[in-house]
Image (cartoon, rainbow, N blue to C red; front, side, top):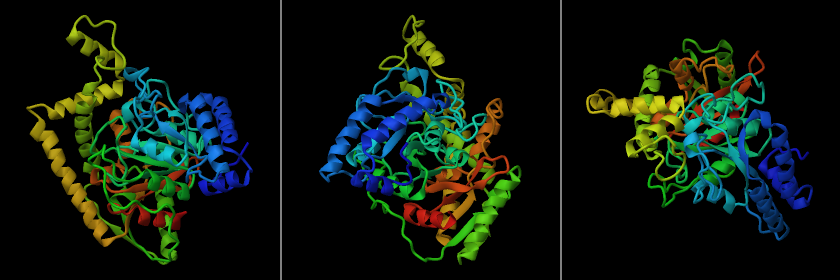
Length: 470
């Protein structure tokens, strides 16, 4: 079995003939088959992956291969890949085949990446544990009794289990960073607008962002750079210069703040807290300035996030009604009953809960009390976050309050599950970039994560600081 370390090493091995792309893909397909019980993949694109691998090998021979030649990538099941199925892990999109590539897929293929399959996720990216998929739970490969996190749990599990080199996820409120923390991988949420959302099945359009999950920081920086850039298909995409493909090795000393209310929050696992302080101490010993700061809005983050994202979800998911594509209930007798039966049977419990909540906060009698007020609070949170980042290079928190939890532990209590995102939603509310990197191993033998947040479009700085912590 070929041992993967970094994309740079893989490229070198391809050029020298130690391995070829087709062998890598064949080995990974066999490994996915042997770990089927993890349920990380909903579908493996065997035929197209092997075909692409053969094309890449020809390019390697002729010295015309791209920056990602031989790199095997998995897609979260809400990212479109032309002529391949995409379902957002929902019954309501069962059998639907994408008519076009997402922009991120186009960018990966242009650099000769090989797309191996689509990964399980919480239905329509709604969840923090991967227990909401219509196609069953994904298991955490580090301990199969525990969740891999969500909503990009399948993507994180695939990378952690060595079933692909890189996986793409989407992050609406921590859906890349939280599973990265739970699986000991690296998860990046770029600045809002840094990466095109064209071809991503939307959950909450003003929060969603596509990003990579990898096993090392260098790969994370390279993939983030390659998938970044303005896109005429996405008016929210930025024209700012793309981040660097490699991480600068400067001796610059950074001024870093940790959010007291997060690191010292009630209910945070003591070992998670200690791991953060150990990392901060190591940074201080390297000559960086470390200071505590107050962030008085911690208790407002999750309520604000859920009021606004459920409102957007209610609107975005209105298109799934059994008329144009996807599942249609056989019980519908007329247009109205077809809508009702299709959506009742096609959507899972959590999706229906969020649609109902979103419809409620957008309704005439409650719009001003909830949605309008939520937007105002969002601006206050954003302004306070950006104000702190004028004085500091980065803000640091734990990625999650604890380590991965056992299946069923939080699923009975939606509020408890929603609070899993308490430290990650801030970056999405403010639109800033954030990364989760491993911060050590808990006494329960599960990984812990530390989160770094930087100012808008400062991914390069974020990766530099992350490198200091690893």
